[in-house]
Length: 250
Length: 240
Image (cartoon, rainbow over all chains, first blue to last red; front, top):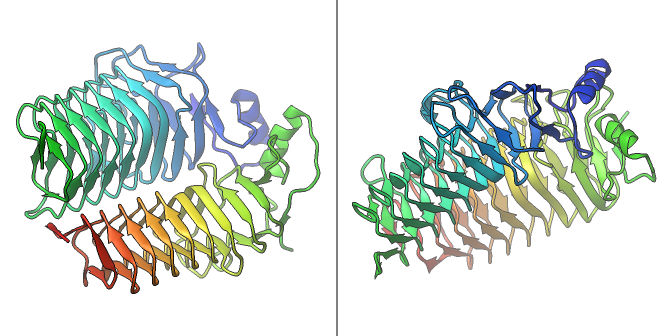
């Protein structure tokens, strides 16, 4: 299913598009799974998009939604993307269909994803390039990372639990604030100049926080609560105070 | 001819409204004015009356020398509704220009690749949830007593975020801009922001501005200039 963007379209294809796909009264293109939907759903033009149903992906080898344009906003609208529990497909992917998520290779930028669930995908839940904004998403039980994005991103208020790789992975210059990342491999991994503030990071099977990059990384973390991660609470970066590591102030 | 968008009195059936919202200015069901680009749109789109407006398409200015949206009234709210204002990468156009008016809010979308500033507003402005990326001057600029909240301002040829005196600048990321990451006047509050890889300062503030819980990495002239730390900032790995 291909979604035609809103606006700057000649009248005839616009009407055809309206007949084929639904649009909200506020102009946002609606993505709704039907019996004829073929995955991945492809967003190929900038615009504002909103889920109008859950998306259930049966195949293990396709993404649910591929984003192939810059400047896209996708409101999950409280709905869920539900995968087959195995395979290589990603939930929302700005890279190559069903590829292993590697954001440094993703050329699509400035994608915003908000307000819904991505679960049980064989690959990563959300895989985006630079300038991403992910807020209010629950990425749960995916085979790769929960949320994996490139640099200059803002990752705010998400829940990323029980993913087989990293709960939240981000490149450099990221803001990672108010998230919960429990029971993943690593809780949060980021690179230089990150601000990691007010997250709950527990029960991960490796480190809670990993602040990578050049040494020193110039990243700071504060007001995080890190409990019962298998290796260390935080590896790298500078505490700006009020962190709690296994009951001790860090 | 300049297109003027105002909250005209139109009452359309549901289906007709859905169509009209894509091609003509109309009222949304909740009474908001709608802003949509069509094949006949002339730039800049002008807002001439106070009210609440929602963008229903991407906005792509027709030339490099015009603004996308000019706001010529006080007390205007623009919800970009997830859509983008996409410039042509050069020239003198501003994305949303309300420099001469007060109490304008811009929320929830992107302004990118404009030749000049991305968003330029007067006093008592609110900019929230906006990405301002790769514009030819400042990403977001607002007057005194304004609030800039939860925005991303990166790779702009000016500063990432500029605000006048007594502003609240919080929860933003301003990286890789060609001047400062954030620049504010006296008396402002700058908290929980990240600013790195900017050519000048991470945060450049006037006297009596307070800075707290900001993470400032590698910036060309230093982490900050002036202002008073309220604590829990980190500058290139050191707390201050």
